[in-house]
Amino acid sequence: MAIMDRIILTLLSLLLILLSIITVLSPFSRFNQLIMENINFIVNWVRSNYLFSGIGLAILLIGIRVLYISLKGNGKTSKEAYLIQRTDYGEVNISSDTIIGLVESVSKKFSGIRNINTRVDILEGQLFITLIGDVSPEINIPETTKELQHKVKEHIEKCTGVNVSEIKVLISNVATPVRNVK
Image (tube, rainbow, N blue to C red; front, side):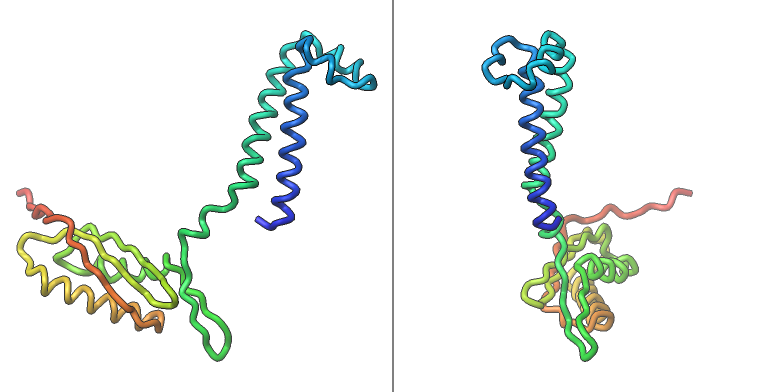
């Protein structure tokens, strides 16, 4: 959201909150000190009509929500990172989601490790990949994970042209073997 939009949204929400407070308090007799002479007719019409307090309360809640949204900002920016490559023709941005998709395409074809979850960290142009999964009970874990690391590194470097700095494989559990029912 642009800064000008935030300023307008903030001013609008503050105005909405002020208007709703006036609407909520107007049916009560203690509000007489705040009423100006030129809006006395409107206030007398609203007085003792508690429906306007409900409407004012709804407007107040909407105003608080709009104010919260305007001050909060967009939370998605911290979640997705981009790997930036410069070429002779310009700049190429590769998102972390793209790299996760490439890793998953290799890991789904890989036998011996199941339920693989992928996390990609891009720090100062370097690529760090973490794979978390379960192994089948009959495999050799060091050989299988080394082969997985090699295939993932080779595929990512071939597809993106970026050197992979590190691939961590975390084995979280031994998967139960799949049995064929006859």
